[in-house]
Amino acid sequence: MARVKGALATRKRRKKILKLAKGYWGAKSKHFKMAKEAVMKSGNYAYIGRKQRKRDFRRLWITRISAGCKANGINYSSFMNGLKKAGITLNRKMLSEIAIADAEAFTALVEQAKAAL
Image (cartoon, rainbow, N blue to C red; front, side, top):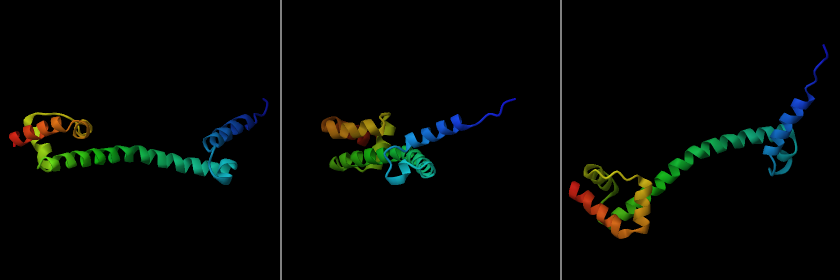
């Protein structure tokens, strides 16, 4: 049986890593060993970033809702509690959009939340 050489698989693997490292600074885009390390590290950062993005947006929405609540004389936690008791199930993303785009509608929501408390 003939001996199988791994050149094709090795080249394919290296090209894949170097393609992912394209645009990296200095030798990180040219040398396989450095490129491999940089690609692994960037993959970890990307994974962590996908989780952090969800947290960051939720914080932003809560901040916007809180600002709208303060303008209407109620704090955020009381407002959310009032909405829950009133049976209004809007998520924070939509509430923040309403607070920014339609102040009158948000004021109406605040009044309903205050009435439910």
